[in-house]
Image (spheres, rainbow, N blue to C red):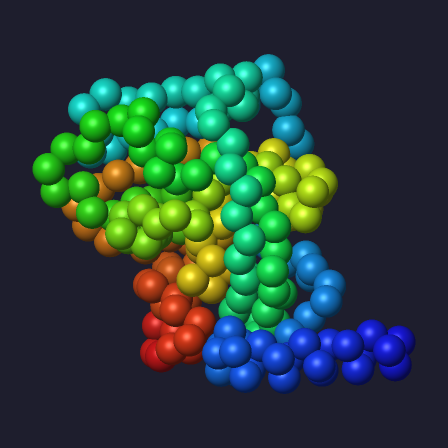
Length: 203
């Protein structure tokens, strides 16, 4: 335990010096489990992914169809609003930009409401998803995601607090307004930049 504590402190100093540790955060070597509600059951025969809103034609993908999309690997940091950060996570999945190729956006589409199991939602500006390190992850550090970490599919948006990295994702809704999602309706910041400590709507 002492070795682990020393290793964590060394990592924290290293990331702080590199400008990768946001203010108010502490480094962790573990991956804590935090979410609202229960862990949903995954049925590949009934699972689908839907893209709707301001698109020329809505899209619906089965689990089999989703898994035929191109796969990519991205390494990025992960910052939880509860004040811990985990560094150099290796994610494998489908890049947002590859999924975006499946639709033609209508004029005015500038925001996305991310839909997940059990009615959960989170809002993210389109410009923040349209980056080369944002992806829908199926694997973490070489292993399939565990159910409690979002299996079968989790959105990863590395530069925002991790509540925007939605677990158990089921679809995207493009719109022309920044509509608040679940946590945004319950006092969290509409954007959530960890380096600006945008935790709550009063920040």
